Image 1 (tube, rainbow, N blue to C red):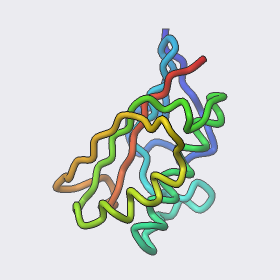
Image 2: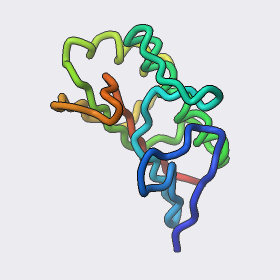
Image 3: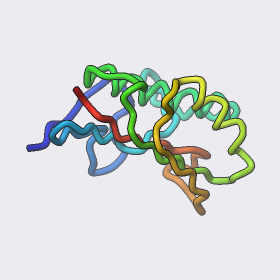
Image 4: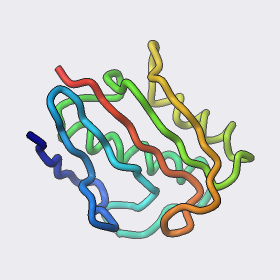
Length: 125
């Protein structure tokens, strides 16, 4: 059984759900820096972009009754590895020990030509 989590985060930009609960796992789709209030992309700086991504993830986690402490796995997609240190700084400010497992992958392109996209898998309960 799958349950959709609906939140105040930006609406999906394709045929997918923001997040799905399956058993005791929450799968959060890749989030980009869309401001949910204005619908605009936040691209003032890579730090501002990453902060918006993390805030969008936070909104989904809150709606699902969980938080960053329960993230088991994260995937970060970067348009350019030159952004790694700044993204890592913002990302790390939202998390505490023990940190989730993670990979960071450089990609040729991302939706809406953003610089960063992050998805997470969360252990519920």
